[in-house]
Image (tube, rainbow, N blue to C red):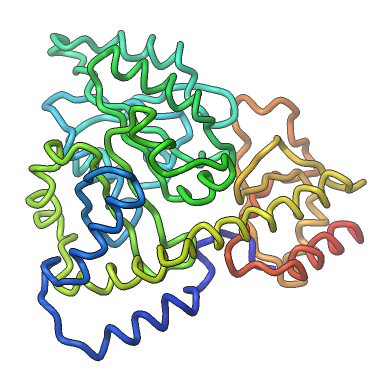
Amino acid sequence: MFFASDNWAGAHHAINERLMKESTRFAAAYGTSALDQAIEQRFNEIFEREVSVFFVATGTAANSLSLASLAKPGGVTFCHTEAHVIEDECGAPDFFSGMRMSPVDGRNGKMDPKILSSRIARYPQDAVHHGRATAVTMTQATEFGTVYSLAEIEEISRVAKANGLPLHMDGARFANALVQIGTTPAEMTWKRGVDVLSFGGTKNGCWCAEAIVFFNPEMAKELPFIRKRSAQLFSKSRFIAAQFEAYLQDDLWLDLARHANAMADRLRAGLAASNSARLAWETSANEVFAVIPKDTAKAAEAKGAKFYDWLEPHDMAEPVGDDAVLIRLVTSFATEAEDVDAFLDVIAAG
């Protein structure tokens, strides 16, 4: 019953096998191998255009270096109030980019376009004392387990472009959002105005594989130097490429995400039917937030369930209450139906 996070799961066997195969070979270093180049071409195919791709180790590195490539002195980056980049990355995006994060409110983990527009207006380009608006970053899927629709992405992009700002997407759970919407990578990114993407593989079956994708290669000119200076240029980067080769082959990445989402659907249905627990809010993709009695939470933990207590959002419609706790449950490619049912049985018994 492991629901703490999808990064608690191991690596898919196809990815492990591909890494083992690669470990017996010699190949050029620092991203110059034939495999690195082949996977860069594979990203072109997936996104239906020429892109620039840079492999890094972590989602935090992908977000931070993406924003660093967009930075201006005195720059301000706009994100949701409770986005991962502002709440859970120890200030790394600020550190590497030299910019500040400016929080933008919005229901269900999504930036409100009107509030975003208002926040941007506070930082005009000649605001020497306050700083100037420089970039917008959105999270897909969000930290609330919700997913921006294509129309919602386009609306955020419209606000960004109206102010001359590039749009970055934190796609740590990109595949989960993609299959939830039922669209294509191109439709969910550059066709909706996204300029730079943090493409996550680690949470969806890879061992350690993240990529920064620029949809306009001209915007990527500084990234090789930024990546090297931040110690993210792997000498054996082909091992990241090898993971992506297996991950992207025959749409494995989409199948893994569909499975994780389906297990979350099973959790949602069980919790919605429960007499002792309730869904905190409606989610999609592979995160579920629930309110359960504190005693039930302790009983579940005693029986081996792993999950995180979650801070109550400031705009939560129905308060948690003194005798209950808000928890986050995340499913993964490795979650089995039996795990979900066992957890629901504990909740029902509580």
